[in-house]
Amino acid sequence: MPRRTIERQRTVVGALHGHFYDLLTILKKTQTVPDTKLLFLGSYVHNGNFGVETVIFLLTMKLLNPNQVFLLRGSQDCRTVAELQFKQECLTKYCKLAFYWIMDAFDSLPLAAVVNGNVFCVHGGISSRLKSMQDIEKINRFREPPKKGLFTDLLWSDLNYEETEDGNQMQKRFSFNQDRRISVYFSLRALFEFLYSNNFRLLVRSNQLLSEGAYFHGTTDDGTIRYPFVSLCSASNVMNYRNKGGYLFVTPTTVGLRQIAWVPQPYILPNGMNAFDWSLSFLMKKVVLILADLLDVEEGLLQIDIKKHKHIQTLKSQGYPLSLLKIDRKKLAAYIAQREKERTQILRIEKMSASENRIRN
Image (cartoon, rainbow, N blue to C red):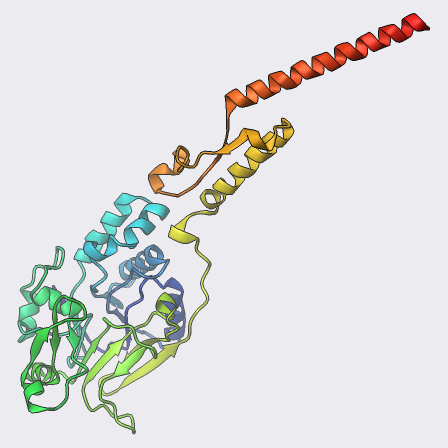
């Protein structure tokens, strides 16, 4: 089914973006609530360094607790986006097959969920083609999202925050999303009509980076919800933005926000390079210099040939830019021969001097 109905759902988690340690922090905090059910709104990879760990951990949770863990598909959970960063992460840590298997798993994820019968949860937003939940049921989700349509809008559409309650603006329910260059903006009027016609009181989505981890659109000074729309991002410090992460507790009558601060994560070398590959260039240069020193090679006999040795053969397929110091073997052989000749001459002279000294004595 392209959507799921979840009764008495308590915790809703937004985009994680490969922030595995934020996921662990959220799970640790939610363990204090017995029988907690978890709904994840998608975008499990991209931007962070631990997308593989995040996906494998969530899929394992789903297999072990199928009635407590629910995973939706996000805008980043498709091949066209994952090719940019996540594929390289899979190649570095595992293999190409791991990437394809995870993409197939993403194809199987539902596109929306209904919590307690009145909270509509989706990664992106609504669409002009969405009138009822039956429209979502008709979608063939086992594929890449198309360039436009209901499937795409559920993953990519945004609320038009700049719209006012001016009559002309409110009448324009849907317009092209200029910021993303894909999908649509939907107006408050379109949101109200959708929620009212389906007996929903709230829409929760996650396709947005937020400084405080969540944004309750239209909240008043006393904290009451004027517009039933919540954006959520559970990954902290996305791309060094220093934002907080947030997740929701949803009950049949209330919605509560919990925030998490930035969680320190292990340092990752560029492109996920391991320590051996990263240090190999440095070590090779030092080995050549040590060899030259042991052979007593003059500095002028060493030449840098970057063009011919731009990549070490074993790492060439991985695209690591490296350079090596190359010894000119002909010059080195000539130099050694010359030094040997000089040494022989010195020994001959010393031998002759010793003979002369014996004769004199």
